[in-house]
Image 1 (cartoon, helix red, strand yellow):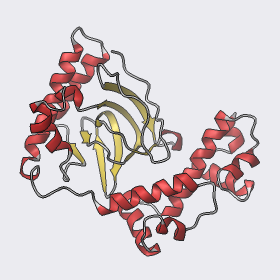
Image 2 (tube, rainbow, N blue to C red):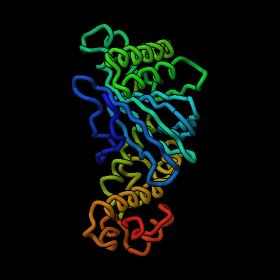
Image 3 (cartoon, one colour):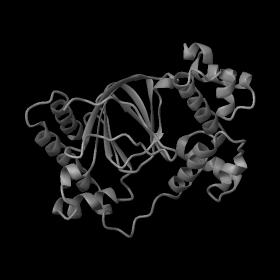
Length: 293
């Protein structure tokens, strides 16, 4: 199985829609090089699969709500299912990743692998994302073996990938063993709030929305809204709204050549094309016209 093209397809609630692997083999591998340019940012998104990222070269800043990881060459991180995450290279980064369904390990939902190990692990409140330094564990070693087998389409790669992913998940199970069977797990309150507010922004970014509107979408006050954004994704809600509008504008510049820059600015929630152009140049380091060309 060759590597898949790394391109996100995200719906209005930041869920990634792109299938990873196939029904017969639900695992996909990706290899990409990123810079710190705005076009290379991996935006906030989530998916139902687990993800393991490995830094082949360079440095990556990986974020989940409330936590930031700085991953260097040889480091890796495992992201649990349904966890919002975002990443940007620090200067540049060569990134390898595997995104996979737990069913590749468990097979049937009634299997011992699923009921005894994977479900307790996946529902563990403490397991959102965990990072491992290059020399800290065998996780990176297991990952490299699985990734290389899949990349080169080695005979029987399916067995190798499943075996190495199973080793990784078993190590994670052992790591969280003291926290797996505590009281019923509840999702972090900040995560619940930020998901509601980001969902509101992405559904209404074309409208004239304010900080008050964003706060109301999660039933919190404006001050708590500001604090929640700062704690979870490190920027204000208005900054997030501006960035999201600009990213939508960038997509339209390339996908809708018949639209004028004024029309694009208006469709993305900007009152004045000049302000759109000014902010676009500040963010993308070029004018909308230059970006389109």
